[in-house]
Image 1 (cartoon, rainbow, N blue to C red):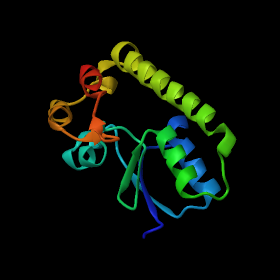
Image 2 (image 1 turned 45 degrees about the horizontal axis):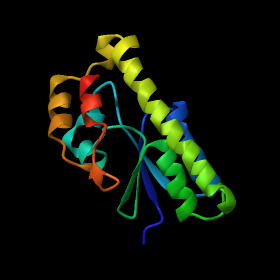
Image 3 (image 1 turned 60 degrees about the vertical axis):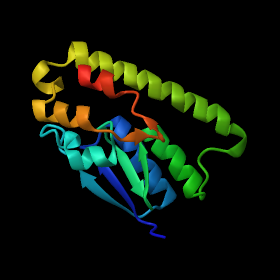
Image 4 (image 1 turned 45 degrees about the vertical axis):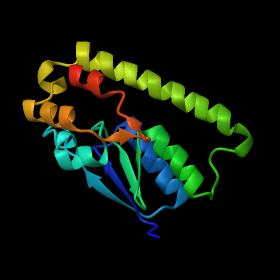
Length: 153
């Protein structure tokens, strides 16, 4: 078993930094693999093979792939149990809040990319759209239910 985690991330951003903070709190050895969003590296076939949503951060540990920062936090707390960040008696409560935050983040991202950001920042190059559309990866064992919303922005 390899105890080194690999993270695919971008320049520090609140959502991306949350996972790094937990990695440090847990004392996990990890290697960062920067992904250049301006060059659409997150939509290359190799990255979509890791994360079918093309989002960052992504954590790969012992063959397990975790996407979305809240999923990474939950995984790290379950896998590396010391120190425990989510008390057992609060696990369901915290998980519900993390799910709500994920849904809100997706909705805000959809609005920002569709309505607020200039097209040259929010738009994806044609090859990135083709790669995203062709990606057939699953998220948590299910078809990527965010795929068509992502193609729209």
